[in-house]
Image (cartoon, rainbow, N blue to C red):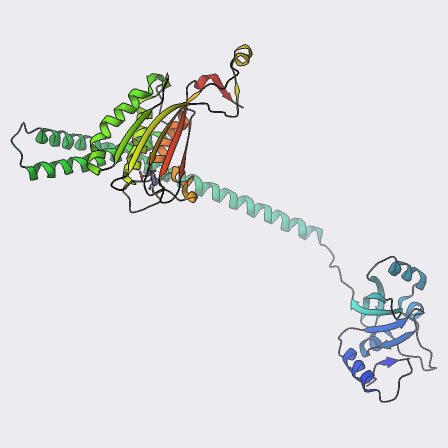
Length: 410
Ligand code: ADP
């Protein structure tokens, strides 16, 4: 078998050259090195076989530019000296069309040439491609329709489930009201004297009954909101009365739980239009949660104050009035319920306002209280959020605009 050719004079038996040749022969691509004139200095076995770099029988050495690449050396060097790392040229090889990748080594001023099979571009079958694209589009359309149908089915099942649970909850209302009435009757002692023990048991049973009533009414509210049946009754109301009602109702429960309960009303709280029972329900939900998550000895503060809510809205107030109002005037009431309880980790601050979300699954409740509260407040064009730190308590705040109709959203 031929060894690699080299036209350089080489000391006979030079082991380094022999080793290099063997190594380059092991490269599975044709590789050759020439000088600037295209004279072949070295060609491995693959190059000899496929590019025809062997000397002719008359001993004439082939030239890279003239006999192999069939190009003008000047043009090629022009490209390489302008900074091109590598020049790709087509070349004929024993196995068919190939591409020669030519690099220039400036220091010895040599050219290194690798040959690779040319990339064969498969002829594009336009019809086949059109069919494939059409099939893909059809498949996508079918998947989309199936997904839509499945989504609509799920939505319907969900709606039916809500309706069913809503009517079940509705059925519970009457027996619970009857039970509650009997507890009150027994506790009033009009049917006979109660021992201390009997009174405690009845009191506890009544509290459980109250919890159930609240749960049922929460669920009924949720189903009403879900089915779009909720209609707010906006009337001129006093927020102080609304808060006092809640405070009176919860006073005893807080006393028994050994948690301090304070109500702070800001000055000049105005009379403005809101749905009294719905806002009361929002406050109740927040107070209930605060008590539930505050340990014995803790404190809950319910506070209301006027507030300037700067929001991105277009005021529809006449421009003359706007000019006279230099100082930002209160345009909303902020109600907050703060506690010294367990607090809520930051990653739940948004999530807790979604349906059925409970941070602590062991706590009582369905994870609906805050979701309902948020919807009711949004129906008032207000907003709700929480400031809280784990282990340091929470402060739920909501804003109710005093004049909903004075703004239109930008
Ligand atoms: P639930 O009716 O189950 O209490 P909510 O929607 O009212 O549901 O509250 C959702 C979750 O938010 C609760 O499960 C609780 O983990 C958390 N949470 C609400 N209020 C407080 C609070 N004041 N302190 C700590 N965690 C709270």
